[in-house]
Length: 435
Image 1 (cartoon, rainbow, N blue to C red):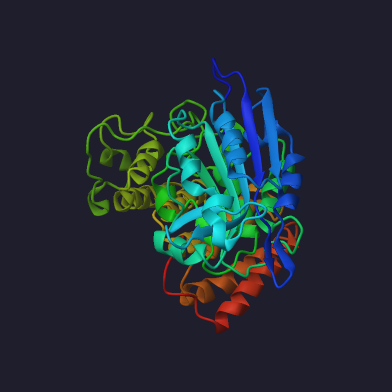
Image 2: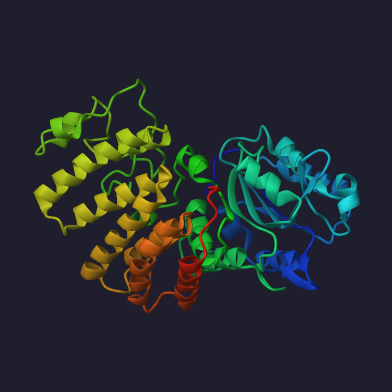
């Protein structure tokens, strides 16, 4: 998030460490370590804002009302808010409600010793749009996991930008140290001079965290496809955004999201659009200065994925015909198609397209190029979202070959990718899809 508007006086960061996840006397998730590591990151980097910021860390809290009081204070801030929750997600057997376990929470007294999930949504409801980020690094226990699989997501947080992971029972998320997802989020914040958007940080962290099969990654594909595009901080960041317009940004407003079309417009049949003039297939005013990217992105954000994909294919063919199949312009449109597939939840297609993009950029730009690594991260993230064994095994070797060609990449990514591929060659993934 990037906010410095008038009337915003302060920001707020609230870091909450719930109960540790312990299995066979071994700590599998250490919330205290996660919060301690995150608290060392400057608040300006966490919020993406240089406003004065209040930072509060809650560790070892046993009373849910104490957490509620701190959350209520945080929610009342007029500026940007980041809430980080880590620990064990549990559930009440009778009421079938989710809770964040606190220090001292017991199975027999969940309703009295844990923090109700519904309180979280209740306190954050009504905050100004775009000012709230909730970051989650949780492990569900045996009580919460069946309920979570049934729900398919974490409910009640539609007014906030939610990013994070919920791992199934028995997963070792850090072996008593900082968990993989939180560690990679921190590493990405420290890596470059320009802070990536939250969705980019999340994609990179989730792709590198070594998550187990079936882990719930938030936002889900459906939630991500219906979410407006993030407001990026500067034109430089557009280099990792396939929907950029080099001349004007999406709308000439430093990368702000495009507005949805004011009236329903049917995308043209790809065959009917003259290949030399794909602009003819757009509605009047449908693109800024003849650039179709804002319009295509608005279609995708509105759930009209087939129309967006069809129009993108037309433009890609036009660009290939005009500039050549290996041109920078053609590669950029392949990136757009990859991101459209990701927004539509078609991670199989998205993985293949990102691999193609990375190969093309690698051939023309070299192993150290920033855009090459961004494409590799896109391929890796989409591959981790694949839930059927066939798709994982088919695309895994290509992805691994690509990662091996990037010596500057974190070597742990290659090891984790190879480990997942090896495991899934022998063990089929669950049929239920939870993305």
